[in-house]
View 1 (tube, rainbow, N blue to C red):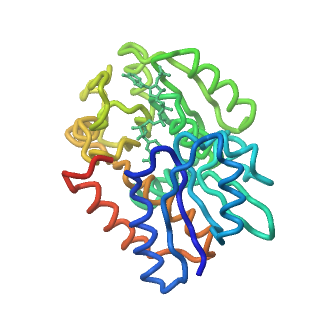
View 2 (cartoon, rainbow, N blue to C red; view 1 turned 180 degrees about the vertical axis):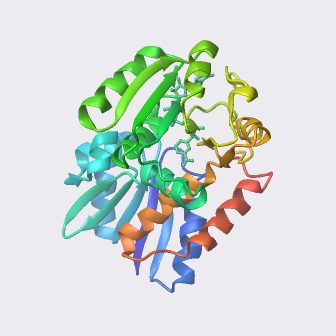
Length: 288
Ligand code: NAP
């Protein structure tokens, strides 16, 4: 028996254990996936414990995605560019870090949305951790231009400048989060992505975007990273404008699918994992 798991703090709301365990069981693999609440000061001890207990693959979530890096032996290209790790694998006596968040978004865009971002013009709302993963992965996938719109303009400017240097094949540009700027960008873009928490059930701040339905065109693809609820007001507006919409559960699903592949070397039963995830997300009592 080997073990997989997720570390974070808090960790009790994580949907990963039930999703991964159902997939492992369906494939008859001799692994169990467990949640571990770990304090930041205990990360090094946790890794040593994992080695002793045959915990060979672990998802890493808030607040450890950046702090874990200094404890690892190697990290992937994506993780290096994103500056955060969400999956670790113990192999040949070394801990290797990956970031499957951006890959998860890309796979959702391609497989659920039927869209290839190569050569695309993209407007990304937000410049936090989720936006960063998406901006890196879409750049690596050959997007032509990614415009980052953020409430705190300096954060968008710093991210755009950093990624323009690291991924020179893609043009990165920063704009403010204002009606004037968003309207101008909306005339040009093919893909619009929300990577702010606006629309999230538990979010206590602003509930609306400085963005109007009449600016959205039916040829556009509109994606939300927010997955609780799946049917956000942002996506409702985009659907009413006739755009193709992509819900945030796809990114969440595929980041887990990619982690599973890294650990087991197998493609998991994706549709079973999607069914379990969607069941959990639509359960009204579930406070994710
Ligand atoms: P984060 O690092 O805290 O970044 C939040 C971003 O949203 C920042 O750019 C922030 O702007 C902006 N923002 C927050 N409140 C705003 C408001 N009222 N008006 C305008 N902008 C606002 O958060 P994150 O980790 O990137 O997560 C963002 C959302 O994506 C969350 O809902 C999260 O659940 C979701 N997410 C989903 C997945 C998935 O797998 N589907 C993965 C990652 C994240 P400032 O810089 O001005 O503060």
